[in-house]
Length: 293
Length: 322
Image 1 (cartoon, one colour):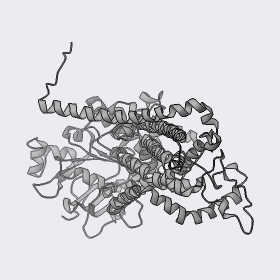
Image 2: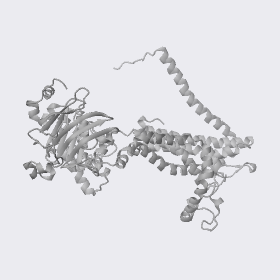
Image 3: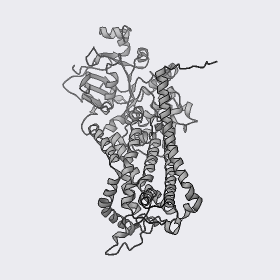
């Protein structure tokens, strides 16, 4: 599959040059403020687990300040693709990949690029909330700084905790009990705590792997509101099984599918509304109308 | 109102249940019987000497002066030296095996550490005496030269003499402790390895996704999770170190003094006392030795029980059995 990138939101790229997206930046992109997130480009990404190919030539662009939804049935490589974006894929034994992932034009897999730096700049929130249970809520938020051996003063620390918890929509609920253990919160609160923790290290991109699938509808709504607010500062990529959620939160979407016995890939991509109202590919039409999934 | 339920077991289930219960109870019964036997044999000694058995440091049966004060101190010293040496090594081995080693050699490393546990204690004794001691006394001399002002490292001899007295540094609690640590390491390492492996993958991934280094993940996720197992495993190996016999017997030269100068020649532990004096003991001396054995039994039981409780009550211990 060539590196052709379709869809109204992402303008077409040419195959012969990689890593030069800066030369063809959209006009509006030049006026982006630095805080609206980074541009992520996946270029011909393929993945294997112990010799079995699970992703075939996936190319996708995620512009700054947008929410991209990855939708599709189970087992078609959405989560694998997501984990490739922040270099978590290689932590699995027997995992291999091909292709490039560009963060603001620079390949994060280039030799000499630090793994931990890529993961710091591209944060991730997982399906099952995983706060550190033995640590307090405040310590959970700043855990990322401890993990990367960065020190901040006490006052900065308190400001950071308040700022991240506010952005995650959790501040009002926990401001009086910041010293309580992180594991003592409800599922939805834990997930928002994980979002706050991910925000504390200052990422430019936030990846979310089905963040609401283990949560009740109220918590889901809170998190979707959080995603909408984060859009102005970050690029968000969210894997979701819930098509209505994709419609609610994302501006563009990519439909993944894997045929029987074949590796997964992107069947169609474009603005989310267009994908649901007017899908070009019959397989997309079948999926969004619920004929399979 | 809930109703009482009966499982309605089949005959084969009932037979197995009964058999397993009997065998399980017999383990407790055997341990209790050993303790009872030792306690019963201690009665004559404790009756004769009373509490002076615990305060007298000399062991001179011909003068009717018997006491395990010095021996107890020596036992604890050797065990603590073994712990101080083995604890950091066991943690680092276990952490390396679970988090740092390439997957290909991980099983080899596990086998290597477990093999350390399979080596007989007397081999470690011979190793300690013939191979380790000549080098260890150089280290002991260096320590007493530079830190001899601290009572622990002081040795009653001139460390700075041109021809220094080697025999004042041999057969010490320090060298015995080093040899015992080799036996304590695999035990502690095995327990620690088991709990490190159980650190939840979700938390590990969260730490990695935040940009954590491998050491960061270990520090923030693995070690806090495994705290109970670390302490439990250490106490378990302490129990082993307290009762270690063959290696200590070969290395030390018996001396019945209460002293904390671990680098100095001469010390005694309960197990070495029993093993060394068993052969030519009269009936009353035998009772005294068995009393010392009873004391060791009680100490080991307390340490191991405390270890098991600690591990069981901790997060990591919930699924570990020691």
